[in-house]
Image 1 (cartoon, rainbow, N blue to C red):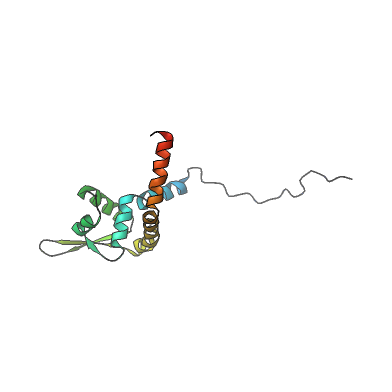
Image 2: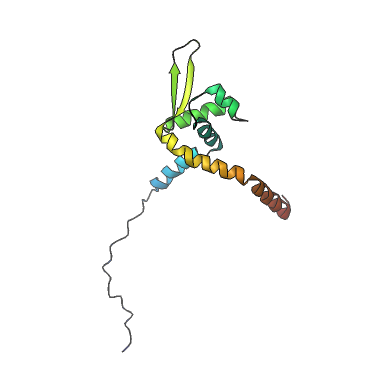
Amino acid sequence: MGTSLKPAHIDLPAAPRPDPNHADCRGVASVLSRVGDKWSVFVIMMLSDGPKRFNELKRLINGISQRMLTLTLRGLERDGLVTRTIFPTIPPRVDYELTDLGRGLSQPVEALGKWAKDHLVQIEAARTHFDQRNHT
């Protein structure tokens, strides 16, 4: 006698159904868009060694405009990654600092920044090769 090809064990647990709205994907995407933004990466890296004032951050982050730094800090504060402390001096002093959540993110962000710096020459060479091959 041959082997039967009929399924013998058909009582399997149902696989969990994916969220029809993909809310989890959208949520993760919104977080990644914040922490993956180049200015957010720079701000997190600059704040990893302690609080900084706005103008100090602006000097440290080459090429960022005042408006973009303001928007980036506001977004990081909204996401709970940065705190803003106002000191009652004349003129008022404002410090920005990573929260515990932000400090937890600083290690992978710094690793990503280090990787980019370490591989910049290779990436630029690959881009040049690609552009020459594709006449861009």
